[in-house]
Amino acid sequence: MSKQRKSLTRRTFIRSTAGAATAVSLAGCGGGKQPESKPAELAKPEVPKIPPAVQSDTKTANGRILLGLTSDSSGQFAASGEMDRRGMAMAIKEYNDKGGLLGKTIETVHQDTESQAAAGSRVAEKMIAKENVNFLVGALSSGVANAISQVAQKYGCIFLNTNSSSPTESGENAHRVKFVWDGNGTNFARATVKNAVNSVGKKWLLLTNDYVWGHNTSKANRALAEAEGVEIVDEFMVPQNTRDFSSYLIKIRQVKPDVVAAAIAGDDQKVLRKQVMDLGMGNSPAWINNQQDWPDIYGQTSLFGVFGTTWYYRLDLPGVKEFVARYQAQFPDAKVKVPGNVLYNGYMAVRELFRAIERAESLNNIAIIKELEKAKLTAEDRMQHFGGWMNPDTHQFQQTIYMATQNSEPAEKDDLFKLLSWVKPEDALDEDSLKKAKLESYEETPEYEPAGA
Image (cartoon, rainbow, N blue to C red; front, side, top):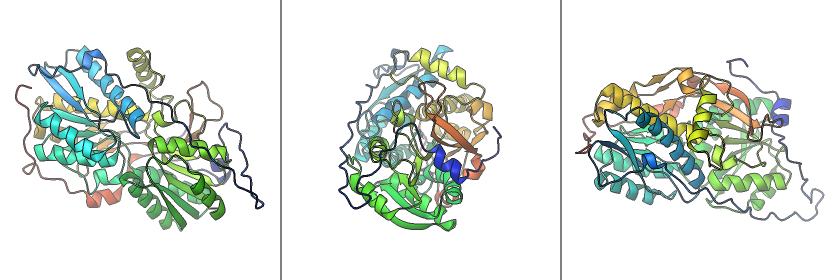
């Protein structure tokens, strides 16, 4: 396929979102009773496992580099937290297999951040003040990530925000010690909104998770859509942990928008997808789902609409097959048989941290921050279509953004995505974050290098 950004016709947009599931029409189109939608049952997430090679004995501080893993193992993002840690473990294994880093073994300690900001603050404080970690790595919820980053900045501890994607993380909540590795809501909106306007229509409805990521992602969708002449006819705020979307879906059917732009995440998204398909609404209206995280859709058939992602395991690019093989060798018993975007982000963040440490030849936080700010990778090194770079003004990594839908002709069982287009990093830039990000100076950031590291 061409490397240029591709446009979608209305026919392609609508047909590409059809999926494999049979559409079931809503009863009551002629005034009859609406069917009831039963709350979906969620599969219990796989118990998180960190390989013994990277387990930490917190009593032995000499000759090691200690990473504090601040990711969820309960709550909305438990499944993604587990895959996030596996990506980190892959990067750690690569370095430990060749003798470690700066002559030291890399170890980890993990605590559940519970998808709660208060837990994130508590965990970060404990890991820095009591565990003497060298670095903090993780986060799925943007509210949790923001809480962790405030504690990290207070001490000067570098924090890699691997997988939370509110634009505020690299905007008004940016910090000198924090580096953001996922695409954010604005990046994905810039990749999807214009195509949807041109190919589907200008009557839109927003469906929004009522928390920081949902609010800011929906805000980005609204701003970009209205700039293209879209009329936002309504916005429905959905509380987190919603398990019955029938009232929202009935209202959507009544409003009859051309497009529903959904900013629904985690377990809520799993429930929404099933109920949309049960009610036969997967193709009409057209749906934009800002981002589909691989742990949230793996093994499911209720996938529809057009959505964004940062990576796919069947990309025909150098290094992808080898990366998948390494994952399968390291985690042979994993229920998720192939890696996805969340694991990829976790891996890339930790690998680039290690490379920055090598370049700095030091564990001093300021020296490593300066090296991370200069990070620039080729497309081959990123296993994406275009090269990427760390934005020194926002501390968000700029990367290729992919637009995808359900694959109606999978080459194998796990081939769930059909990639529709990809967008250059510079074409998906979040200009609003550039204006709002105010990083602390190096002088305002405490030097941090735990004794005994």
